[in-house]
Length: 392
Image 1: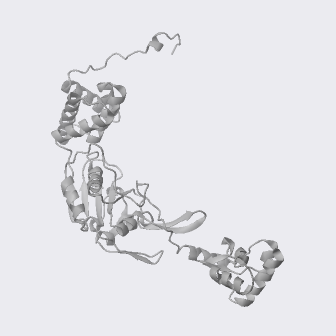
Image 2 (image 1 turned 45 degrees about the vertical axis):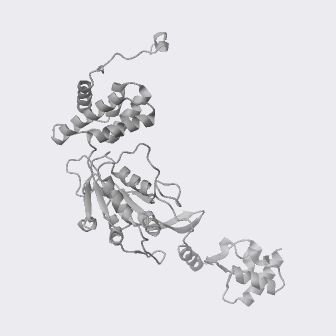
Image 3 (image 1 turned 30 degrees about the horizontal axis):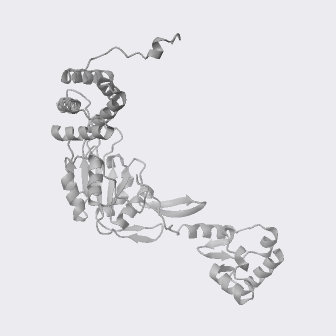
């Protein structure tokens, strides 16, 4: 077998003096010279590749010894050539697992509030119209965008921004795939090609590296220099950014890690929507929806919870307390109540994240809103504990 391979490589060198050949040239040459078209298949192996579909003809010594001594210039040429390869399936950096269908699932029991109608109108228009949605944590900024897309059956590419997010994460970069270096498109490029909604979540956590999105926020295409490719936005593409601040940082320290965003970046958002917490009646519908989802509807408890949260928020905005109860935390309490079957225990466990004084004041306030709960009840002792002789 080795002698036949030596014979083939010697003839190939005579036929192709440049020392390189493509797979199709090899197959055609083999048939023309009386060999099976797959006879020179040992040449189109990975170790002999010097470019896309191009292989070097190995030396007689390499065939006999079974080793490949590739010169440094050929190794460099191989690496450069491989970096131009774009895989059929680009890497997906979003929360979704199906790159062919990025339409968000409908949220069971979703109740629209705030700027939901306006956000939905913008997405429905399919116009390029970037918007900046700001508001306190847990008030449904991201959910409103996702559910507007779900109702309109529009694809949504969500990117959770951090201080480390850069051009490589957003536009695309090289990845190691099955031992090979290939270029994968990032979520911004994918959203542009699909005409999807690009959701930049927690955008105020970004550094100045996010300035690579300037042409994107102008509605222009982007030139991906690493693969020499120009990507134009398809119809329907737009950008929606969410943040807890207005891109000016957090003076009160509540949102540590948020940064002051570049003025030129912020200026590219035509409008800013200040998302509020829902009104009392709307929030009660949300809480009842959560209760229904978790399998235990208690309308009186829902009414007490939203009243309690409303009083705390008013106190917060007056500057009397440093913390508040978000709509998301009410959902946490409802779920905890469904698990522990104890109102006060659910509230206590879900407010443990606050400092001791704040937590006690919140629990005390709830006891005034709901006279039916008992503060500091005696712990329920399990029968197995009563009969146990163990010292612990």
